[in-house]
Structure formats: C-alpha cells, structure tokens
Length: 216
Length: 216
DNA sequence: TTATATAGTTAGATTGGGCTAACAAATTTA
DNA sequence: TAAATTTGTTAGCCCAATCTAACTATATAA
Image (cartoon, rainbow over all chains, first blue to last red):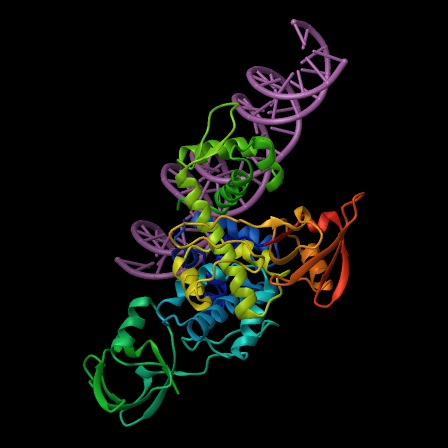
C-alpha cells in the first residue's frame, strides 16, 4: 500500500502551501501538521523518493506534477465529501470539515465518483473552494477579497479563504452565506471596519472578517 | 486515541467468532485476519489490557461485555454503510462490502446516525444481517438454512450466511434476491442438490449454495 | 500411556511514523 | 561583515504492529 494517511496529509498541506508560495519550507509544514521538524524532514525524504517532491538539502521544496496530481485527488475526495454531506445528508457547512478529513482517506474511487455523479458534478464545495475533476484538474480561484473593495461597490459572496468552525458559526449568526449580495456603504480608514448592507439590513464587519470573504 | 483500525479489525473478527462458538481460539483469528500467530498473541494481550477480552495463557479467549459493545458499534457502522450505499447511492449488493470495510473505521458517529435516520432505521443490511442499534443491541438471527428444508416447503429468502462477491454475483445471475419466495420441489439424496422453483421457473441449487441461504 | 501433532507463547528483529537533543547552514540584523 | 537568530539536518530513541525462529502446553492417536 503506497499511500498511508500520513503521507496523504503531508501531501495535502504541501500542495496547499505551494499554491500560496510555490516554494515550500519545512517549518510551515511542521506547524500545519503539528509535528516536529525532524518528522517533516524524514517524511519529505520519503515523498521525494516516491517522486512527489523535489528535495535538496537546505533548499526550498518543490512539489512535482505527480505530487500535485495526487494531492488534487485527495482534495477532490475531501471537497466532494463536504458537498455531499451538506447537500445530501443535511449537515451544516460548519460541521463537515471534520468528517471530510476522515473520509478523504477512503481508497475506493467509485465511492467518490458516485457522490460526484449524484451531486451533478459540482464545481465548488460548500465553502466555495473548487473541486478538482477526476482527472486532477483544479479551477483557479479568481475572486477578490472583500477587504480590497471600495465604498459603493455591490458584490456577491462567492467563497471563503481561511475557514474554521468558529468563523462559519459567526457567518451563520450574521446571516452571511454564499450567494448573498453585499453593498459596501463605508470603510472606516482607521481600522478598516466596513459597514455593509445585505438582506435588507446593515452590519459592521471587522477587517479580520472582510479579509476572509471572497467576492466577485 | 484508543481505537486504531487494527484493534477494530481484531475486535470485529473476535466478536463474529464468539457468536459461532463462544470460546475463541487464537489460530482462527490469525487465519481470518491473515496475520501470524504471534501478532494475534500480542494484540490479544493488548485487548485484554483494555478490558475487551478475558485472557489467560493457553486458555480459550472470551470477549467481555465491553468488547461486545465496541464490536457491535463497528459492525453497526459497516452494515449501515452497506445499506446506505445500496439504497441511497445505487451500488449493487456485491460491491458494498469492500467500501464498507474502509468506512467502518470513520470515527464520527454523527455521520452514521445520519445515515441511519435517512434510511429510516433499518433492521437489516442488504445481505439480511441485523444492524446493531446505536445503543449496541443486535437482533439475533432466527432463520433456517435452505439446506435444512424439506420438499414441498414454501419459504422466503431472508438473509445470507457466508457471503462473498462471487457468491453474490452468482445469486444475481440466478435472479435470487432477498424476499424471493422459493418452493422446494425435490432434494437429491445423494448430493443434496435441491430442485426449487421461484419467479416462475425451476432451478437446481447445489448443497453449497443452499447452505448459505437463510430462509423463513 | 507415551509419541506426535497442533495450538499458543516468547524472544528478538523490522518498518512506519513520531520524538528530543545536538549540530550545521542560511538569513537577518546590528 | 560579524553576530545572532532562524531554519534545516542528523543521530538516536520510542511505540504500534507486524514478522520468523525457537520453545512450551495441550490434545490426539498409536
């Protein structure tokens, strides 16, 4: 068996960091997975041996095409699962990450392909992140941050950038969901708090919140 | 984390063997899991240490109430999954065992409880085996073997005793499914082959097949 | 009832994935 | 540019789960 859960978790983290910065460093992997640096070091060597990474001592890591593809398949499983749990099993978008973290390691591709089919080949998961296709292609995110928008703009909430259960619960409490149209009324220059309007009422959103909302 | 997949697999096998013979021996566990005897020996000690088994050197093993309950929860996950895959995802009954073997190790009980709810709290899985409740109760099988029936009896196929993909495919090819009414026409004394009638046609079923069909 | 076969156990090695402690390279910053 | 900090590496250990080889009980059969 070539792919353990451990290997898959490393690959996923590395893939995600490669999107942000192309070069990946060992320390950030260690932090993301909450393991020690030596653990990362030895796993990185193993992944390199499997042709999933390019590794040279003391140099930044690079993920290979093979590694990228394998990571995409894991992320596909994760995001299809999240979508299925929300759409077909009635879970809330704040409940599904945890469950999908476990299900993404299921080997059977038939299982996920059937989910995909039942869902009608969705392009995005419940948090607006793109779902890789069964051939490993993944759409590039092309949304703006709400925090980069100006007063008087009218935008639609399309996705979230750094989610967590708490953040999702906060959004629930504010009635914010994907697809909601938001008008920017005012930006406070000092702390970048935004006063916005949606669903017929006004809200003040902090800079922290606005930096996690992707709109178009 | 107290329950690894390995522990769960041992427990499941031990539970199943305890149904058949109450006392369980090490060798049969080793065969079922395809591991060596020393591996079983050390795992058995660990399970005993966890209070799931009673173990004394050179004596037959006994599963404790705690062990039985934990095994029931794993089997519940397995059988609910099989039912869900067949009823809600369109898989054939010969495809689901493999997938359920993996899904049964998912921790989230909410996931399985939701399946249960969506399925309407089914009592049996697609192969007629009872599904333990969320509190760990499991219905006792009270069917007869088709091979124990006599000519002129009219029985209904209720469950299967020793399934495999090949056996299920064979049943598919013969149009045999749970709920089918079968009339026993003749039993050949020499080899116990049965001539039966169902769905408007006659078939001859071997003793091997008849010994795997549970009827009432 | 003794010999043999079977079942169970122990000792010790191996592999995967993790750790700490100690050290080396690279990068920052004074 | 030299010193200090951060980042990456190596050595060596641990634990879970497996294995083989060697041994001990128990059960079976001559």
